[in-house]
Amino acid sequence: MSRRISSAIRTAVEIRAANCCEYCRSQVQFALQAFSIEHIIPVSQGGETALENLALACQGYNNHKYNKISAIDPLTGQMTGLFNPRQQVWNEHFAWNEDCSLAIGLTPIGRATVEALKLNRSGVVNLRKLLKSINRHPPD
Image (cartoon, rainbow, N blue to C red; front, side, top):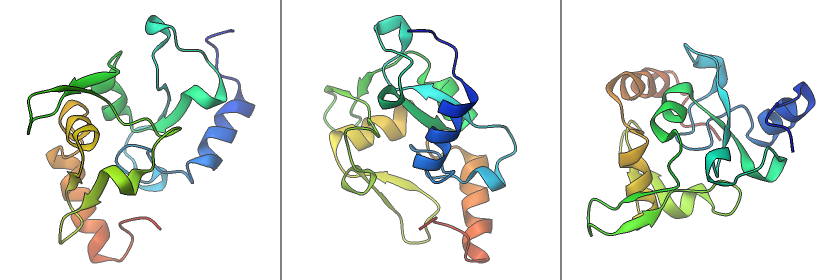
């Protein structure tokens, strides 16, 4: 299958994701950079450019993920798979802290993903706080 992502596939991924990053839940409408259509299993590791292997992702998270499919859980020190938005449910692996500014990993997958993808970078945390103050974060 081609690595090229057609506009129809891009639109389908955006609609499925409700225009939110499927890893950190940031919203497209408030992004400073265009979001990426991300290969959950990277092409370099045998992933296909197919709807079931694509996710909408913030550019920063996509850059940090690069070709990773696993990372170390900072709590246990064990290698674990990263969050897969096609196979796993966000709320089962992540939660928000009290003011909804930090994504908290609830499971080894969640913790490894928070760490490896840098889900709590300072700029994103600041944006979450601002959006929370006007009732625009977290997204529904």
